[in-house]
Length: 360
Image (cartoon, rainbow, N blue to C red; front, side, top):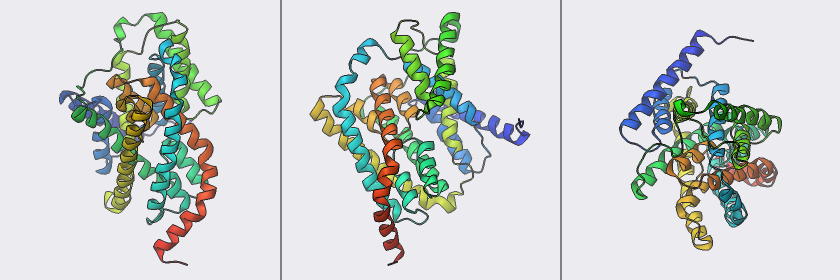
């Protein structure tokens, strides 16, 4: 076992310090979801400025397991009874995902540095790690895909809470339903810890997409639905998890020279805006067809990460189970079908790329 170097520990400490400072600043300014969004913004600026930030993957996975346990605690029998009524929006979500990729992939295929695999999987609004892995295995540039996905998550997580505050009358506040550490009973603490650890291990063993989140969330939901506990992780731990999650997003920009990758970042921003516009359109259509609230649908369709979007829904007090199930369904859909769909799209994207280069 290799011990962390002094430089690595320094980068980790710096990331936490910068993230905590950003979270505190956003909380002081009464910004939406301050501890995650503030940490994300502060560490992104620091990373692009050249700061050697580091967030260890095991720590990020542990904090995501905490969030999964918290999300599972929001599941109630009433929520579970509503699952069967969600099939129209789930079908709409899959159609939206296909449309997003049909729009985004050709745009990226025309850009320098994006072969068909990179363009296709960079345009897929699925899990960051899963899409980069699948695209890389098929010959895509992992660095280019990582940059586009990082920009997508950054912009979505930044804009969605801001939009709710400016246009939906959302007043920022603490995440609802959380207690404090001092009031958490020992038996409840043991049950919650078991949900996080056992759910994490089981999720990895079963190779679930987003296993650190989904495994603990499913186990926590089962435990809460069975009535073994009504407790949620305390606010102090959840805020720390938000800082780590936000700093983890920002730290992804370490090593990128803004002057050299500005074009790719701008392209990723443009594709993300198109995804958000299509999400708004899909949510408006489904609101009329199903009667589901637009605010719930836009959170379920927004092209952010599963952990980030469900955390935003929880902070807004909007149907967390609905949002998390839809993001999970999209992730499963993409992991299972994207490699097959790429075989059909490969030739077309290659032609688009060749046309840009003036070949053929």
